[in-house]
Image (tube, rainbow, N blue to C red):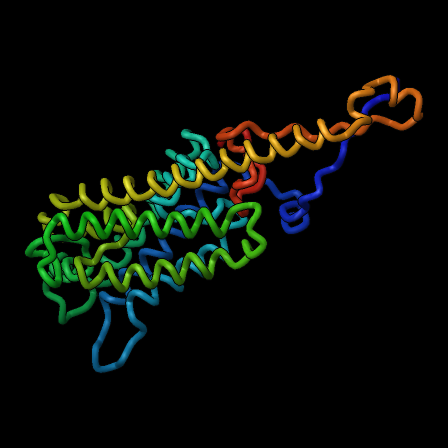
Length: 313
């Protein structure tokens, strides 16, 4: 009986683009921190220093463009999350490990706080701004009397859950391995984020990003920290919903693929002959790659940017 021959993988989308580059955890955390810093500087800085008479770039569009630029620049290193909600969505979907997800969120918080600190320092140098914390209040997430249109807690909570679920769904869908347009993920995620920010600003500066909400609350008035819980709980719920839906899709696809393979084997008369047929024909046995177990993180919904999971994730 001949030795089985391994079949090389047919999906070269990752290896062809990264030349075998597999960044370590520290590199990935650095990319997440720096990308989140960029998002906070652009997303908070543009509306902070807006002069209505100069017709500046809208804050929502600036935030969306920052997401696109950060993903284009750093997604090949870390996967381009820059948002605890997206990281949690990937965790629930089975695309990242618990330890790596916790480290990602920590790096995102550090980057967001550094970006807000830099903006706070700039505000203190502007002579016309007497109170930098009061200025930060204008871009900080809030509800009730701290909402632009006095939106109640329930309304802001619902919008944050819905917005986070949609944002995570766009990210997971665009970065799925079977998506032939996955290279456009930075543009899709950035546009989705810009549209959601435009909605969130009117209701209460809803950021759909707990790291950004935390960063702005740290440098705002005391009420911001008291309302910060909502901008963690709601995105987590929304991310969990989107992650569970996509994990269900992956499990269903895995079962369908397994059923199709079983049907093909049953319909092939040669498969019943086993080793006798292989020995008689003189053909070498070709070893089929093992199917990934549903929910094991190795399914076809694998994150496009992250590629094969490293040991620390």
